[in-house]
Image (cartoon, rainbow, N blue to C red; front, side, top):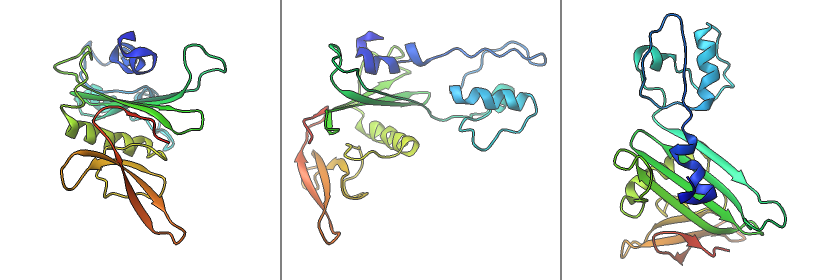
Length: 219
């Protein structure tokens, strides 16, 4: 997994994929295709035991998938944050990493923050899992529409973050302090837009030059 580095690499399936083996006296041996998360294990056990799943559980019972091959999760997620210890010779920035995947695509998003909590660097890695199950070729630049859709799924799951680049139409203004990515109306070229608010509460959008790929030096 180190082909992607110590942060991105931990979101490859080599690391994330945990085999799930269930033995039930009334179910014969079989392999079940489907997407499951660790948070689904407890609801599944309770469901098999005939115990109601508390509403506070975020996971879903996998029993319909196991018994009837019903799709439970269209998307599954992973996320982690890391703050290096003081004086670390290997890391000098806090990072926030998130990933989403379905049966065909995976998007890994990694944000590195500077010491004053502004974004220092941002990476997007998109993989076609059917054509590239080993996740060796980042095809984000060539499939931006798919990347935008998966970015939206990540935002729905984890929420927006202040001063964060998001692959979304620049016209969708969420409020001052948000950093949005979109396209210029006149040329359809990528651009970055920062939203500010004046003393009267009016919002305005300022354009920052942007090329496809990583975002660096945002303050």
